[in-house]
Length: 170
Image (cartoon, rainbow, N blue to C red; front, top):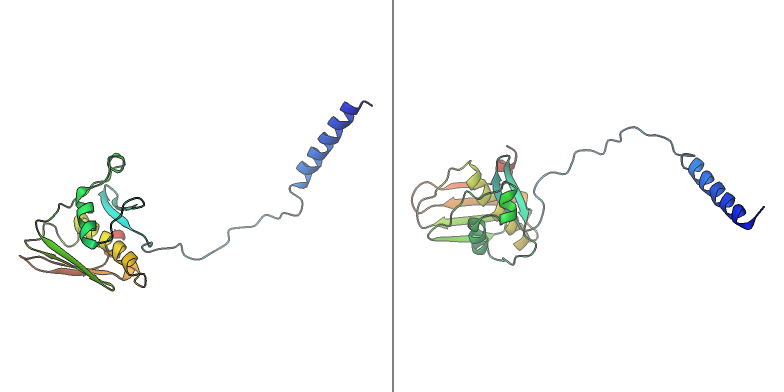
């Protein structure tokens, strides 16, 4: 037998052994119950935009915005061109005058004029969820799910406290 033929046969034998041994000792299993899936808001800076299917979070990876005021401005600017192509939009517009403060799980938005949206619509959800996400990053001991946002317009009734989960469970 030639050396070349011997090498080919040895390699073929090794491949056949490996292929036949793959299933040895492995037993099929059924579905394993691992409990409920994870839920709630995840930690991290996220802007929430409106879409046909409800609110969608967009992580802020490359933008530096450390204040709640800056986040309001960024949210009002709306999604990037790529995000708009995915069907995202903002229903918010920048208010003429406002102050946003956060302390622990509480965020308050004080507006100089009236509030432009209803308490339970996507525009308010965008605002509440975005502020909750940023407040939980600013204060590490606060979970985004626990943040309550109150909107206090200069004209009209106060809205809140509101939680992001109220807008994501729709």
